[in-house]
Length: 593
Image (cartoon, rainbow, N blue to C red; front, side):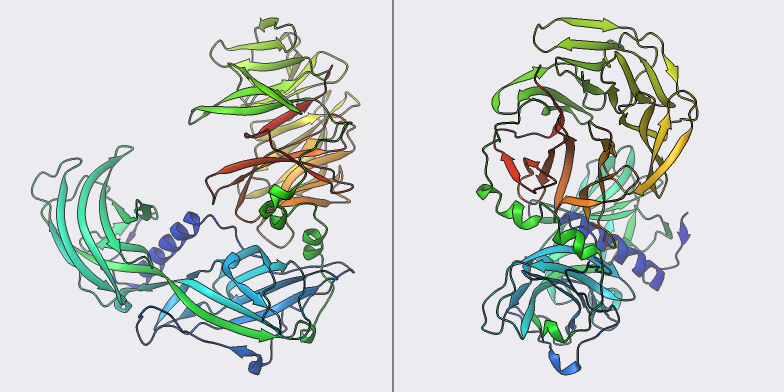
């Protein structure tokens, strides 16, 4: 709902604009959200959330190599939780969030923090999370690679992003005359310089654009390297919605867009600068003795500590062995290339390498191997038919399917029955499309995980808006369900049963954080084990090996050129193999015949 705002300088507008800018900047650096309460098992110790450091242990400095206003906000940094293990620490801390007169903290880069021991030697850290909590401040957490020399440690925060708003910016606005009939792609050159919270910004032009049929003004600005974002507002516009403003970065320039509901503005309009955000190089520090902080048992850090694959493994991935164990073999179904924004070409490739075999017509959303690995079944969206391809003879068959699958197909071992989810529920049929029926009690929010070996049950995940997924065991004959456990997944396949039906592989949020990880658990959720979790990584896909002893995980590094790497991980031993010959996401793994 739009809100009537008399002027652009009212506090409610400032807060909303700040939130918009902060979200834009945070999304640009692709950071996950923060650990609020760490937890550890009996192997470790953790500080009480209420524990604080003695005042004389904190040392704050605002030294900066570039000139900033003399009243620039003084940051304070605090470590309030430490989990101590034999080989490392897990730490949680906060930065002071807000100085009402001098600006507010927008963001920190945990990966750029520096931890040193009492001799000055740096202890490598691996970020876990950050979160912006209005009541607690800017929270951060990390674990260390090693412990260094005991006694005093020093944590240095070398940079932070701030925002200033309204009167803190101390710069006049500007006027643009759009004339009586502004047109799409028309541009007004301004080339005006402004000083925003001590930083010089040149507003070069304003351009009229249409995006998806909606009129926008695009303001192009060039500032000093520290400037992260600028927002402007039209003083004559009295209402707006949350998506009217956003900031983007393009070729070193700051692009701010303002949406108009009723066509391009006409005549003279007065604009004001509402927010400016910039990165500051500083030297904010705290010295502390980990052993002096109160501790209590906790469990989330235990999940990280016992995980097989974390960010430090990713950073050292070139050192991970690439030799595949002799007992492993099979055929992989992999993404091959983008066809369009909503379509991906698929291919098959031998686990041990060789040439990809492109499979035209396959959509990754509705495709499966036969249990013996000789065939692929999928739905051909162009022909609107079911399609089976023999991977070895090349024989192809088409069948009429009276219902189209939307997400996942699962082929029951030892039979020709398939199950798949569609727009209105779960369906079961023979692979030739005959015997089709809808499983009672299922609907469009029921996602298929797969068959269980008893041939009478499916694993499914129920989705609902703003709620965790609920894993259920579904009886195919009558639609009865048994609730198993809840989890939070961003991956559409949700949970995948192991070949023997005793375990489930799924994506979930690491306990008491908002960082995602790949887990294995029993069907009832017990014996939950974090297999892999990453900082600033996009988990693309995951699958079981045909014997259920290994999992394959594909991960994309969104910070460094979207590099994608797949790993084999043995959940029991944590042995890890890097698949150097696979450069796209792996969707499924079938046995060799």
